[in-house]
Image (cartoon, rainbow, N blue to C red):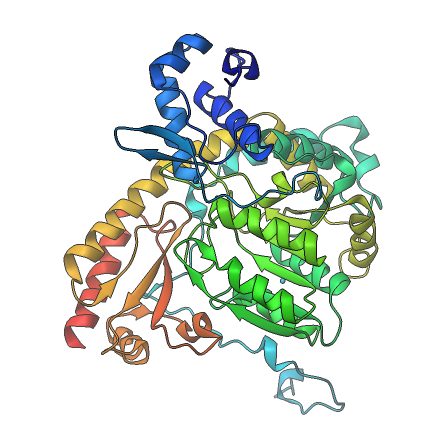
Length: 490
């Protein structure tokens, strides 16, 4: 006899859709065990009458909860709280002249083999595959430039042009804390925010603070290569766990924890890099419980949270963390354009203070004027408007790209249509080799790139990650045409 009528607070004038308000409040009730596993939820008609909302709102709410894995629908029986959610333990865990280049080096220096990457020379007429970047042509440059000029023309702007805070611009930190709280449920304030030059700087700083020689970091069997490199630079031991359609296999992490002391788990929870799969609700809770029990940090890299095409984003691990185990890293670079080096590191205040001290020696304070520009860009709603605009464009490009892959390469490639993000994880049939594909593609002015980096664990999965968001419709047709010519010759 749960008091549904008095347990929900729906704000009809809020910008957030009613069904999402309702879904988020259901999630809190499930997390708090006020609605335990296997609880049967009221029918849509009954609940709509109790809450005085349209029945379609209830249906959309239940669909959202089912997509996120919190509830399950049983035909002819009803909707039930997922029976497989593990115990939350909610109360326990709260990147000619002789020129200098012709001379030999007169001194010795150290080289790090972990940093070695093959450079690809840009050639006229070539199309280059990427692993999922935004289309710079869609950047609202005029809006950003207008805001930048307005900020620079203020009488008091000189105060922002000297040395400032090691934490980044205070106004931006306040605005980001509020924005991340409203859009991602992060219970933070400005003291939890450190402005970075992008996600990679955040990963570097976290590695510097967390890891010493011999420490163990758990990562996916497939993983973001630059994160691996940052951890290996600290001479840590990487232990890899399997990744399936529900993300990192947390049962494997638990078995490792029973045998060894681990320092951190790195996870791209929303869209795993490179496979694009989403970490399920069940595994998110399991991972949080493990971090509480075994005292390790979760490094959550949420690099493309904003891009979802089938349902609203699942809230980050950091939004459910009440024990201070999660370090949350993100950026504006992926959303707007890579040139705007604005990122953030979210963590407990003490950790943020030490990260700021470390940042002092690689980037004294960032770019205060750019940070003020993006503070205005976020606060005015321009960022949200830009996201809504490019989401429609990227979805159309994703749909066309996947359609053409299916039509032109049956039996050669296999893949799952990504629910979000800007890339597809493409499996090449085992009888073919990406080495050969890359070689033939050169004849057709198509650059495949350094595909080996997706198989750092040497498991020979024969897959690569191909971005679709940065190509126009015409460019997608041309890319597929050149790839078709390559495969036909193969």
